Length: 94
Image 1 (cartoon, helix red, strand yellow):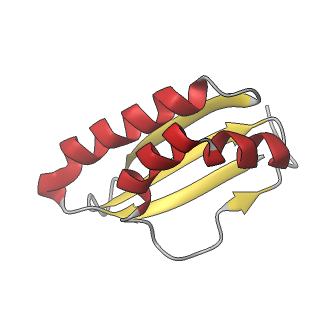
Image 2 (cartoon, helix red, strand yellow):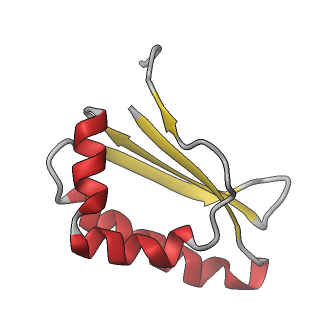
């Protein structure tokens, strides 16, 4: 399953946002069921970023993201999140 978040980040804050994402992903990567993560700015709108985290299951994602240290690190990232649905079931993968 995927957790996809989009973020509005001023261009001048891109490097600090990337560092915050890297710190959060480092903590998530230690959680059972974590499969990987990708993040980066949009090529057409450089103030729009995405963070995509892949998990084995919904339960693994919920447990992984609710751990106290991960939740604290994610707060620095999620403050810039666009308010929209974030959780997706993977039907096609390669």
